[in-house]
Image 1 (spheres, rainbow, N blue to C red):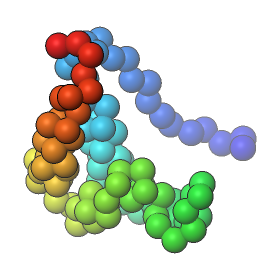
Image 2: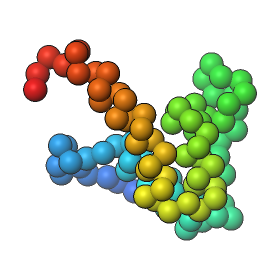
Image 3: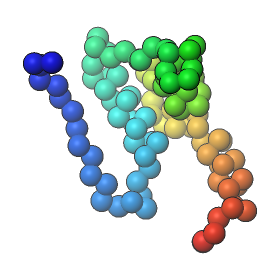
Image 4: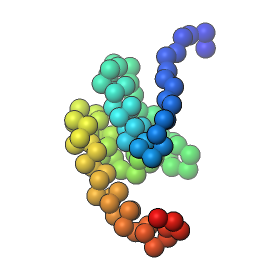
Length: 99
């Protein structure tokens, strides 16, 4: 309250090229790198979960947070979720209504 707070506004201009998960992780990583002294992860509880760190719950893994904390390069961070993404792409095929 009564304090200026910076932020950003993201305008997606090509929805077919936009990767929201990748974008969100890249933004979190950038803020973490730019403001390490101010950055902190939200602690539990979060919604129905009492023990897991909220970002781990949202991202579905601890590995992304741990990689960001360890300053792992972006390409290596993305490689963390690539196998799960490929599995999901294969599993969803029978449920797609359109090409």
